[in-house]
Image 1 (tube, rainbow, N blue to C red):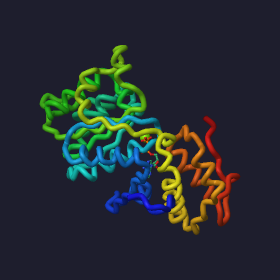
Image 2: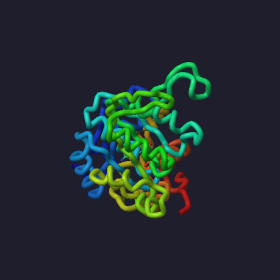
Image 3: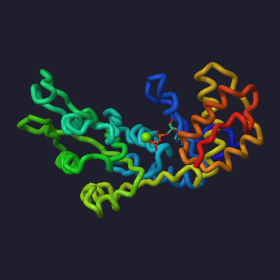
Image 4: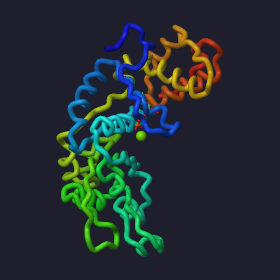
Length: 273
Ligand SMILES: Nc1ncnc2c1ncn2[C@@H]1O[C@H](COP(=O)(O)OP(=O)(O)O)[C@@H](O)[C@H]1O
Ligand SMILES: [Mg+2]
């Protein structure tokens, strides 16, 4: 339950995060606002199964962090593999996603599993799935449904068990309506839909997140954590957060570096919007 002190510790903390020191931020999920808590109940219900999920939300709202949490909570033994569909190279997207046999890709002498195969037994997180080329959408669906993946140049498919967690910042149905997205993929994801509201619609998360990021970054930098002055708290609570939680994190990070003892409004570099 949220405590009376908005700067108290996050309500949910996970200690089994990845070992990399860079992933320190991936350890806790701060969900204090009633809307976030309602979402969390939905997450708890959907995480354990292997069913495909779609997370909808503006950029910076925490979709990837949530997907990582879902993977951990699922108990699936395989890896969490995160891929931004917008970053796939157009010419090599199929080989990058599904792998290839020797000789067919860049003259490579070795074979490669591809991102899909690397997620075997685990979770494949596809960020901005709306940016996946249409042809690959069909192949992806086929691989998920048949539980088999065909590497580029291969004659035989390999069995594969992947849970798809997809994310999007825009409405996929509208893309499907104009033929830019495969409706069958929307149907495949339809039973597991999670909406992560923008930060401005869950104001109860703002100060707990600010306190959390202050603690995390002060510790990482070996600095004493400054207090967040009352005036600064009010500024944070009134801001519209066009960049969502990612913006809040960088605002706090910056304020930590330029303030001394107490964070005041002049230490807050907010994004216009
Ligand atoms: N509820 C949350 N609790 C703690 N940290 C969060 C939360 N939501 C987002 N973050 C942090 O904010 C940053 C942006 O989140 P991210 O998952 O990358 O957003 P998205 O994938 O929606 O663009 C990351 O550093 C993430 O760890
Ligand atoms: Mg992201």
